[in-house]
Image (cartoon, rainbow over all chains, first blue to last red; front, side, top):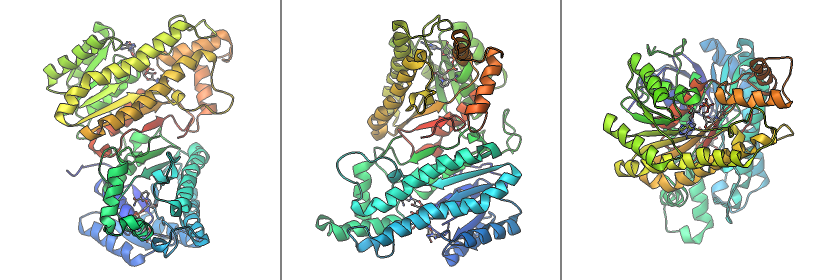
Length: 277
Length: 290
Ligand SMILES: NC(=O)c1ccc[n+]([C@@H]2O[C@H](COP(=O)([O-])OP(=O)(O)OC[C@H]3O[C@@H](n4cnc5c(N)ncnc54)[C@H](O)[C@@H]3O)[C@@H](O)[C@H]2O)c1
Ligand SMILES: NC(=O)c1ccc[n+]([C@@H]2O[C@H](COP(=O)([O-])OP(=O)(O)OC[C@H]3O[C@@H](n4cnc5c(N)ncnc54)[C@H](O)[C@@H]3O)[C@@H](O)[C@H]2O)c1
């Protein structure tokens, strides 16, 4: 069922929207009337994703941008303003699980700490730095940060995704704290800032996680990455199923709508109940 | 842009307001006034039939008539959530009238026993009444609809907790008088977590909305107490003192309205939230964060 909806004309910048969750968020918001600036490090992927939205009768444009660079984000915000005139909604989604080669390592390296901190934390800060002044001038705006339920407090005797996951989880906890603090800073300017914490989704990111587990756990050697993913879902999700990028998009759609105008500084898990807050 | 009554002037909503809950059936407890009435109104505007269940028959009916008079489907049912038979009968009446219950909103709650305007400390009655309405009443309400929802293989339960049920922080944790209430609301959140796990295999989601502060009878009682026993500004009316406090202590600088809580309930009750269960969401202008 396609919901006919009303984010009429909201100019929305989504980072990391060339594939995976970011692409799902862009799809749902555009179906609900938003105009999408599809941004990604991979400019070609952004083009393909924006073309697909336009082909489906929506309005979108592609922008290459690297969130790890403040200059690149400043240029991105300027380019989007040039194209669409304003930015109503910012979705910081671009993220990485670790540094290249992650899927073959059993333990984290300095490079993993740098990559996750650089993209998942500083990348979000850079993007907000570039867009928030414009929102402040207009005294209106909605920011949603894509964190992870892995950024919530762990529970039980085993780290669900192993030790290698530590830098990523720490970076996502930082995203949640950043969301709290940015919300306080921007509340007087009528800007809401919230986080969505996805659970487990079959995107290239989780494919890398599954490959990593396959490489590091002999008991998993005979399984395909997709089977490893499904086992993790069955193990941990009360609702018993994986989430999809569209599920994350629907939560974002709620948080950026006026239905959520009194909600700020909160982090909402969309994870079939696997972690509860 | 939607033409539904109450739609936003700028037409921006997460979903078409007339379709978000079209043809759903909701039962809302404590819905004759305050937050419950705001929730019932939003759910009705978004297409749901609503059973208004509150202590007084007259108040329940007149709230339902208010919705019917603007074209919605609603009935009022005298219900005491502390009494299992009473809430079970309300569920049956709702099924008789509308065919099923898709959505339960357990909203009925109390802040303290009577006489709270004058007391400085809690008494045993406060513990009893907050436990029996806020905790056991929420449990009874769920138990009354669970067999029906399990049989249908779907359902949405939304509990109205409070951000007061979250961990306190800093020195301004409120007066001792509020402790039984906060403890009961922490209980509602934990109940939400536990029930969500139990009901997930049946495709029933269970979530909580944690309101911040709203000018309802409940908040008026709390701030009247503060003013009477000290702690509230004596030179301002109770209402003005509350407004000032909201400006000073809430990041967004204002209290919430019953409709704001209704919007969050509508989201959890909608298809959009099918992957969300066991969560508690603060709707409180950022006054506490989780
Ligand atoms: N997949 C999951 O199960 C899951 C769970 C919880 C949270 N998340 C989070 O959701 C977000 C999206 O994840 P995904 O699964 O879609 O991942 P993905 O790897 O499939 O997609 C990430 C996208 O971000 C882009 N990107 C990476 N670095 C960038 C940079 N420096 N600048 C701009 N763009 C950059 C990539 O090119 C890619 O298109 C991430 O923040 C991730 O941490 C994912
Ligand atoms: N007002 C606030 O600031 C605030 C903040 C956080 C949470 N809440 C919660 O929201 C809910 C509604 O609060 P409100 O402010 O609208 O309060 P209210 O006192 O205005 O309304 C509560 C309603 O519940 C009904 N009720 C009480 N006991 C009942 C019972 N045993 N059976 C059936 N109905 C019963 C009352 O008759 C009344 O109509 C409560 O659970 C409350 O704890 C309120």
